[in-house]
Length: 181
Image (cartoon, rainbow, N blue to C red):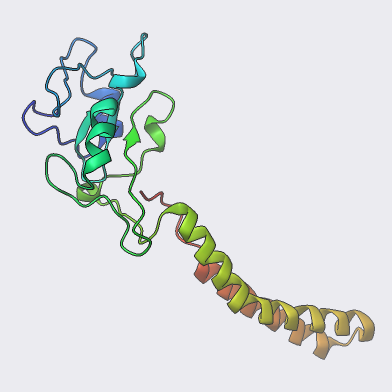
C-alpha cells in the first residue's frame, strides 16, 4: 500500500488489485483533496481515476492533466516526461479496471521508457524495414522465381538461404514483447 506522503507505487497492477481495499482513503497528491477512484469501484469518476507515470507516482487524472499543461515532469520526483528522440510527451496511464493489467512495469520496477513515442517508433520502423529488408526481399523473390522455373536443388538452397537472411533481419527489428511506456 502506498504511503500518503510518497504516492509512489512500484507495481501498480498488484498494488491496486490486491493491496488497497475499497475502504482505503487515497487522495490525489497534487490537490490533496480529490479521492482517487479505485479500479474496481462501482461508481467510476473519470476525473479522479488514478493516473500512473513511468516513475511510479500516482495522481488524480484531472489534476495531473492540469499539471502537464504547464510542466513536463512528474509533480513528485521531477522525472522528465518527454521521449529522448522525438521529444513528444509521455502520457500518463489511467488505472482503470479494464486497463490495469495492460500497464507496463514502472521504471523503478524494471520497466523502460522507449526512445520515441509509439507513432514515431512505427514510422522509424517502417523506414528501417524498407531500407534494410526491401533489397533482401527482392533477392529472395528473384531466387524463388528462379527455383520455381528450374526446380533445381541449387536454386532452392540459394532461395532458402536468402529467406533465412531476411528472417534474421526481421527478427532483429522486432522488439521484445514487453510493453513500454
